Length: 474
View 1 (cartoon, rainbow, N blue to C red):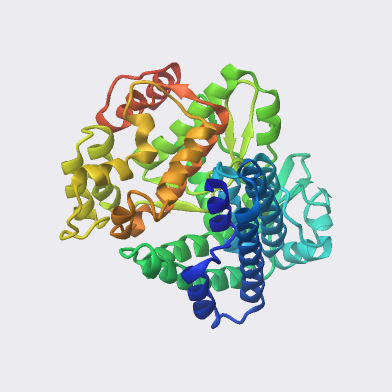
View 2: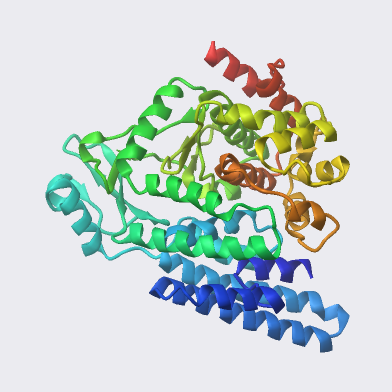
């Protein structure tokens, strides 16, 4: 049943019982084309889920797993097709699901994986129109060469290959027309959905604050001028780094809805996973992990969109980080308020300190009445790799951890019901799960606890890459 439950949640197929009834009442107010389309997707998969449940009753026990798998695959294919055409927040949600949905069968994950880099593109004439409006001339006049067919299409834009008059190879990201309005609609719908979910399952969730944080970050992402500044700043902060690469901005070809950088050769995620040696995969896993940790804990700004389509991989184990649209910057004191919660888990491993820190920052209200050990057992689940001296991330570990976190009716339901997610943690949570999913797919092993203590307590480097980073910082 784990697969069917995860697939139902992933697909919006929450359609059994009270949750579906509440969804119909709440979503009845949303009348836009996108909302109607999402409601049809939800209803379609809720019906499919109900049918699967009915068939399960009369299906022999030995064939039920096969029935669950068939349901998950059909649902994932349906979701991938719909979200790949709809862009915006909904597609980003599908991208996230595509690489952390380890509870889904392999075929279902493959269907969703298309959202990482192979979404439906816009017509060449539309892309040319955006370039003309933003840069003042047709693409063939702005650039020495211009390829009409995009190299990749994602949630808010697509990438074309071009060259300038000097023959420099360029990657030109062009924003989809109307995607800003689509994102606002999606976030309005998300507020309704989060409110409903909070009422039914997560009583402590501040839905409006959570959606406001997403709204702020995604509104920023629509302005490519902001992303251009992010790229320039990250490139400066990582200049001369031994294994992190940031593409060079081409500001003369960048504007509000067009962003141009140097073209970066490298392997895509699928190519890298299929061809890289095990040692290179281990190195790349640590590179991605350290890039995130250094950004969060030392720079005060980090990339909040860590799905594999945003990387290019190189045979020496270095990684180029491509997308800096969704960047979270800590406000003064914001990270410092979260640090005691992390330290209570991974440094002290102390349930009482954890509960006190969670109350202080807003994860729990002071009169929650929960046993500290039960809170620790639930909250520490994603941080198990940092509670032991050596750990190997695996897809199975991700699957089981996600199932435990998502089990709203399970043994930790009393803890879940009283948890809130402070707005400071919204984007960071995405990074924690996203990076862990990548490490699981690479089966990355290492002394992750000691590595994290390098950033938390100034411990000596535990690996060769850690020592190289210390030397670079010096």
